[in-house]
Image (cartoon, rainbow, N blue to C red):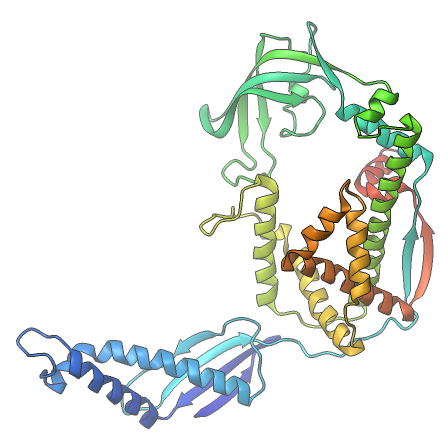
Length: 444
């Protein structure tokens, strides 16, 4: 077997493999003889078909079978001999096949990058700290009041914050579109649950009245056949309802299973839960900052095949997040724009390769005690922590997720040892709701 390797652009390699003619012919003849013993051809008894007739009838199929098996065996051998590990399945291009001649083919693939991990060595990394303050608890209580509003029907026209019970039907070019019709639908004006303009268009509508809304679907809308298109929605309101906020008292506290201590106990419970979530979020934000800095000083070529795989994975994730469908084998993922995922996919692949090499370099292993501590943190947020512990420990996939998170923390702890740390204090809202804080700053 002869092997020639050519380096193409980036991490691409082109391997040309030639299998000796005698090896191909030997396997071909062997299969042809086996076929002759069982071939059934009109006019001949089984096992008595002349070899030239068998060859004429089955030569093409046997040639393909032999070629496929020789490709598998020779490619595996060639890759091992030359210490090459393809990122994905190689693209195979067979050359001309003819008995009596060497059998040759091209195999094109990407290889994993080879690199040395650079440590931070004094590079600056900004790490944040935060704590839950009384005003943050006040905001949370107000949010809980909003979620526990009592809705009362009113006779006036709808305004922002009201809940409406409506029927609607959507049309594109005056033709109803699939999924664009609903009856008895609840919508809160200002919730942002509908496409832009829909909820604002309901302001001023009264019960038992109808109106048409002329709107446009966002360009990035999840259904490609509707994205960017103009539509008309015919809406009929059945009820307009005003939300009444509950008083913050002992009865309100009981809504959240606080049986003793009233509002003070509720505030303490809320603060404990908020602190737990804040701690997790601060850890995640700091890990991301540490990993971003590591990526910045470790630049190397990234396999396009891995990026493509990750893009498909992200499309799959978005499909289930947006539409909430259960996973199944024949699901059809919408053709989301590639641009939505490329940067995130590239970062994930880059970090994944770097992360793996960093773990090897420092021989980092997951610590069982730290896994236990992580499970305790998660379980502590629930009323029955023992059930949550069992839920994690009874499933390998869930345990693997915990172990992966612990490994991230261990790696981040190791990386930051060589960094220069700049500490920055941020509010609860800045950490937990950065998108809201950014909007507020833009409005100032």
